Length: 383
Image (tube, rainbow, N blue to C red):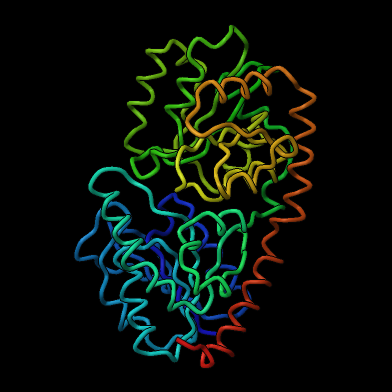
């Protein structure tokens, strides 16, 4: 099968949407499919394989890039897989489908685009005026959980409900696994036995919804207990975050380690006792990092957001907190810092659930079946 993955960002940029497109691309190619990636070129990237095409964007704001040439570039594929939202890329992809119905079109709806101010007004107008038309052209719409499908913008487009399928994202179970990493803790100067949490996410404006300011506020005036935090990720906001924790008086307990390699990332999870995922907006719809933590055998304190709350189960694989609620997060932190047995029990349960629900092989099997169904049936689609 000849497949095009169309996505707003792609590794080495750190982001969940691009990471999913990467996993799909590499795993499908390993199974013998011809897969090409089309993504905007925001800056020069060295070392791309020949099947990754970074397209010059005439206009781009954040991770939105206007790439009208997609219309022609997508010629000749059996199936196009659009990762949405992709403002400026979704439109030419859908226009091609509307004019040339000889290709299958699968859309993964990753999240509701959320913003404030003028940007938020543009997103809202797009959702009301264009999105129903865009979604209506897709042969299948994939969503990472039923919870998110029931609460996102798709719920208002009744004509596509029979085309929605649930496709969670996966984790490499043989790369992320339980264990201890005393070496990492020693390198960071974390005393043996001190409870340690980990946060993994971008530290740039595009990932401002990840909730670090809420976490830093929750740690303010925290009872005098032993604890350390490891922040994995980089971005333009890092210096301001570092200034914040110094002002609050616990800068020596938070360790910013920057972006780490794919090979080293599992070691950092194993060096921690639990994972923090305090996102504040609906732009957080799943949480690959929470699945990685679960596979690593540690529980997650997660905001009770649609989608996220179906990845992290409250009282079973982690603890839920109210999004943006400092007191709620503070209470959850106290719980997992104090109750060692609870941390371990939740971590064991998280690993078991990851093995059942989030292994990549069965998820790619399901994706292939969806592709095959679309390619064989798309000519029967009625508009």
